Image (cartoon, rainbow, N blue to C red):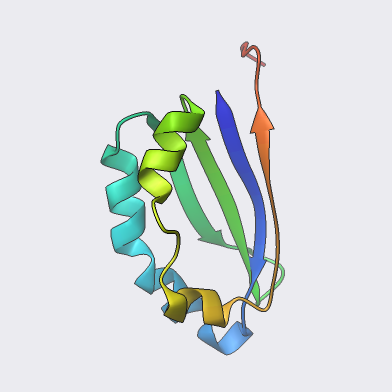
Amino acid sequence: MIIIAGKLYVDAAARDAYLAGCSKVIERARVARGCLDFALSADPIEPNRINVHERWETDEDLERFRGVGPEPEQTAQIRDAEVRKYRISGVEAP
């Protein structure tokens, strides 16, 4: 399993519009082959932060969905980012 997790920073005044503009991408991801979960959410404490959480079955599933990446308009709004890929070898109940 692959987990993509981290945070994006955009201008606080533009965060809600940025997230609204991502709704189609989120919908497409959630029905994509190999997607186990996909969420972008407003952080409840930092007004300019967006939390990123994705779970994919394989690298191939992730790459097939990613394609060319985010739209240039979305990329231009990101002021900073810290997003990482994690490879998970096992999963168990808490």
